[in-house]
Length: 107
Image (tube, rainbow, N blue to C red):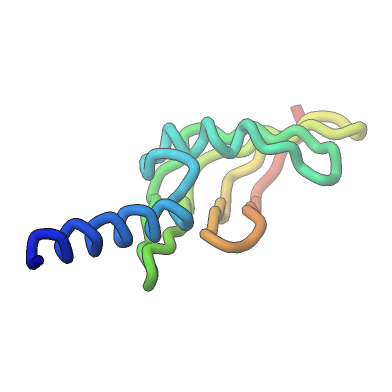
């Protein structure tokens, strides 16, 4: 009985956490690849590179988030292409991903 209960609890924990897991490995390179695959609503193409100073956050019930505070974003839209420093890039478990930049320069 004890072994069965342990297996059931382990299965619930595993499948319960999977529903809120990140869609990428929690490291800067995998996060950049994931962010680079995003189709932004505005039609803007954003390419992230050299992400660092990142944090993998774990919340209750197996929910996760990932945030980086340093790196670069190359942003292309109908006005042209600019390279910006990243202020923050954030992928929370239950909301739209987002990014903020600073110190941009046109290419």
